[in-house]
Amino acid sequence: MSYKVKVLFDGYSTINTEGLSANCSCVLISGPKKVIVDTMSAWDRDRIVEALTREGLTCDNVDFVVSTHGHSDHIGNNNLFLKAKHIVGFAVSFQDQYFIHPFETSEPYIIDDGVVVIPTPGHTLDHVSVLVRTSDLGTVVVAGDLFEKVEDLEDPSLWRLVAGSDNQEEQEKNRNKILLLADWIVPGHGPIFKVTENMKSNARQGLK
Ligand SMILES: [Zn+2]
Image (cartoon, rainbow, N blue to C red; front, side, top):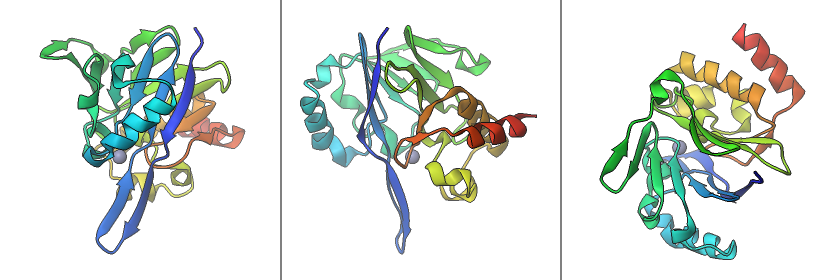
């Protein structure tokens, strides 16, 4: 299957005098199925609709909405997508129907050949990421807040303390796993980055 990943909006986070200014990366995965990952905050409704229009899509064309976790900046516009199945963390639903899926036992949720939702707990205990096999970039993982931004590889306090982690040990393990699987990573609050050989060898060491 041929899939493409388009970052509609780059996430960001900066500390200021009032606290934190942040919004998440919002990603469109297109191929036979259309998937949107992380729908930003409630104030971004118009921007998301406009970005989809630029891609030649309406909200009703979207088959799956994935929120990597349930924080307010990752679920804000899920209700734009009323024809889509919604995956919020480990919960899979459509309207009032909830579907049982054993993410707890590391079982991936297959959206299509080459688009898979995988459990990556740590930032929250039911955090998920979306792994996409693309025709142009190889394997792209839309990783939500498993990674805050590329800088958190050099400065782990960014994911451990600034972003916060419900289970640092699990998160570190899942970060290393994803670094070994991915060619590119879309972090929750920064631009997409390429996984270098150096990052992979550090991840290999970390998993030993
Ligand atoms: Zn976030």
